[in-house]
Image (cartoon, helix red, strand yellow):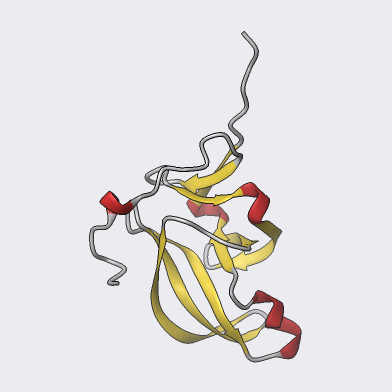
Length: 122
C-alpha cells in the first residue's frame, strides 16, 4: 500500500470507551493506552512512545536506519486518516539487547494526543 494514497475512508472507529492515543491532525485512533510499553524513547522530533500495537496506520518502505541504540530495520508509520507520518515500526534489530523492540511501534509524542475518555457524573 502506498503510504501517500488517500486512505481516509479506511479509518476504523473503535475503542470508544477506552483511554487511547489519537492522531494530532485528524483524531483517528492510533493505539490504546493499555498498549504503551515505555515513554522513554526518542523519536525524530522529540520523545516517542514504544507501543505493543497500533491501529489505523499503514507502513512505508522497510529500510535500515541508524538510531540512538544502533542500526534497526524499520518502516515509517503513517496515519490512515490523514497520511501524516506518526512514527515507525521496528522490523528487526541488529543488536541482541534491542530484540525486544521487534514487532513494536514507536509513536512520536508530537504527533499524537492522549485521550482519557473520562465520564463526569451529571
